[in-house]
Each structure stands twice: as structure tokens, then as C-alpha cells.
Amino acid sequence: MTGPPPGAVFFIFGTFAPVSESRLSPFHSAAQHGPRPLPLFLDLLRSETAASPERRAAALAGLKAYQEAPRPAPRTPKPVVASAGRASLRDYGGSGIPVVFIPSLINPPFVLDLARGNSLLRWMVRQGVRPLLVDWGSPTPADREQDVAAHIEQLLVPMLRALKRPPALVGYCLGGTMATAAACLTPVAGVASIAAPWHFEGYGDALGPMSDLWDQSHEICDALGLVPMEVLQAGFWQLDPRRTVSKYERFARLKPGSAEARGFVALEDWANAGAPLTFGAGRQLFDEFLSADLPGRGQWRIGGKAVGPQALDCPSIGFVSLTDRIVPAATAARFEQNVELSMGHVGMIVGGRARAALWEPLAHWLRMLRRTR
Picture 1 (cartoon, rainbow, N blue to C red):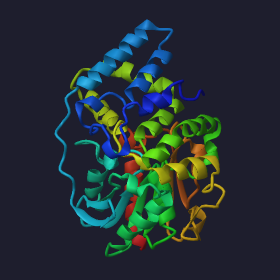
Picture 2: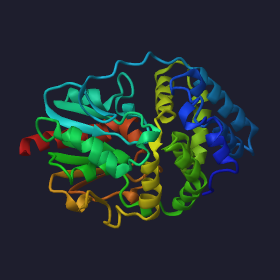
Picture 3: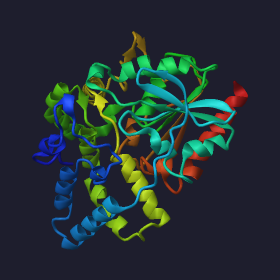
């Protein structure tokens, strides 16, 4: 695996204004429809297709089709039932067991409610569950010192305690890491972790390039007080550069406006969206998690209390994919129950096999949880 291409930091930050006057467009504006950061993506495309003019032409055609594809009107946000600071808890309705779904800090929460006909949360309502979605909001430079632990202690836990009864927690990606920690700090009915890292040394050879990326980026992130999502996107792309490009080649072959094409556009819009991280969260993620692996070594403490699967006193289940390139199986924690899948990181949530492989087993576990509490 190679590190970020020369000039990556320039590409990542070339569009950034001073903190007090950011020129970044909203993710849904036309200028942001190209993969972010677009210059870095084009550099990656050139590298991956250097030996094949045909592949390059196909990838560029797919990129153009993605940029020009129509988008549906944004949906009205669900009502807020609790809030803490900039974070809020959105209620999807239903009268069953309250289940708080905790997304990653890195991408927007709407992957759990991606599109009509492909929404884990709306499907859960029909299964007798009352889904509540954490919306982390958009941090500002004033939040710079708020690390991952502070997001849990200052934002997540107060919202959980505001509910009338302890909810179950379902965390996805870094949200699963945070759900596990939160369940050690406040009473919950149970915790489910989906594609969540805990033993960060399990990234193996990928740790070097990610460390290099942070070395190149942390000074300007410190100045901003934020870690733009473009920094993290560059790291994700380097985990699987071939697929980053080849999926646009495949998109070029899809019928415009087809269900598959609309699904691709919705998913890519999600992947290219996202508020920045606070500098504190980025620093903890790179220095204490990826570099020092404090969670995996049992040394992560929040408010003086050790947190981790070993400290849970509630039912727990972990879903891990053996073919996940973003969060490899080697990084997963072990829970009371463990389910192994063979799906991509995002495919576990929105892929064609997601309902049978993950949604239904998760709903079954939640129903059993209700019967035993």
C-alpha cells in the first residue's frame, strides 16, 4: 500500500479559506457533486488507469454522469426529542423499544436512512422498534478540544439520560466504538456494534500511510481547529484505491435513472458529504487510537473509568464482515454474541443483501432484548 500521492495535502486544503471565512460549498451543491477532494481523486484516477486509456475514459465518463445526475429534493428532518450542545436525537416514530442508532463522526448519519426503499431506520419502525438517530451536528473551531471521549461524555450520554427509559444502542463504524464506550458510562438495555473498530493495531500495514497522512495534515488542522472530511477521505481512498476508481467505470455502464444508478448516486453523495471533525477528535483518533491503540490495549478511559467490551454489564452483539476493507475484521472486538458476514463496509447497511444478512438478525436480537428486559 502506498501513502498519499505527492501534493495530497495541497489538493486537500487547496479549497480552504481561513477558519473565519470558509469557502466550502454545502455538500448538496453542484460544485460538491464530484468526489471530495476532486483534485486528489483525479490524481488517483490517473495513477490507477495509467496503463489503460479505455479504463480512464470509462472512469471519466462515469464521473461526468455522477456529477450531472439529478438529485431528489432533501427530505424534512425528523423531530428532535433530545439535544446536547450541537448534537440532537431525531425520532423516527414507532411505539416499540427505544433504540438509539449512533453513526460515525466521519460521515453524515443519513446512511442509516439512505433512500426511499433502502432505509434501515424506516424498516425498523415496521419491526416494532422506535429508532432514534443521533445527529452530531457541525462543529466549529470553538469545539476544537472536544475529542472522541468528550463527544460521548458531553453529547451522547446526556441525550441517552434524557430518555424516559434506558434505550438499546446500535452503533455503526466509529459510532459502534462510541456506543460500546457509552454503554459503560450509563445504563442501557443492550448494545449492538456494526463494523466498528476497537483493536486498531488490526489495521496492520495500513497504519503507516494513515500516520503519514496525519503527519502531513495535523499542523493545518490544528490551525483550523477542525479536521476537514477531505483529510479522512484521502485516507479511506488509500485503503482501496482500485475500487475507488473502478466503481465509476461500472457506473458509466448503468442505465441513467435506473434504480441501481439512483442507488449509486445516493451512496456516493453520502460518502462525499460530511461535517469536519473537531481537531481534538482527529488527534485522538490518529494518535491515541490508530497509533497507540488505547482501546485495543484496554487503556481507554473516559472520566476516569475504563471502557470497553470487557466492562459491559448489558447484553451485547457484534456484527463484523470478513471482507470489510475500511474496518478490517482484525480490528473488531468480541462481544457476548458475534455475527460474521462477508460484505463490504457500507454494503452491510445498504447493499442488496443487507436486509437478510444484517437488518433481520439485528431486529431479531432487539426483539429478544425486549422480552428479556
